[in-house]
Length: 156
Image 1 (tube, rainbow, N blue to C red):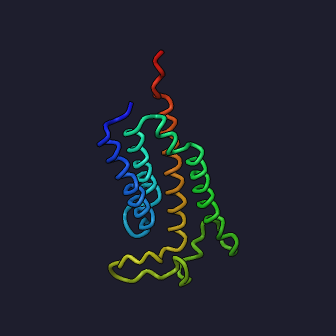
Image 2: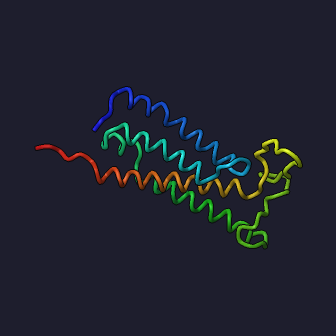
Image 3: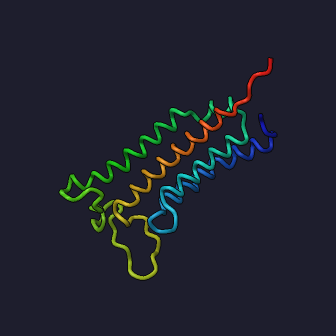
């Protein structure tokens, strides 16, 4: 069943904002409360908003299960490869080898109140990104499978 034009338009407008805010939560996860799971859930909430506002046929044309499964796999592989990257530098699995290198995510955290430097925490931001992509894909796939169970039947 389709919702009204106002509800559909509002959902279409708010969907990109959900994605951007979810990405913000993922990226700032090592500095503030939040992280990969919370940010991924916020992004999946945007997909849920579209699912509620649109008809089954419209949504399955815009958000595809295969694309979300691919996102889920990319997130899992990102997390796994970030964890295995320590082994390349003769360190244990999930070793934070990027911390304090001065390069990508390797700045030292300043003493006192944290000014919010995103270039800190070493491997943690990459792990947050992997988890965020995984949760976005996984929760959206769950929502799409739930939606497929309640699609409207054609009346004779």
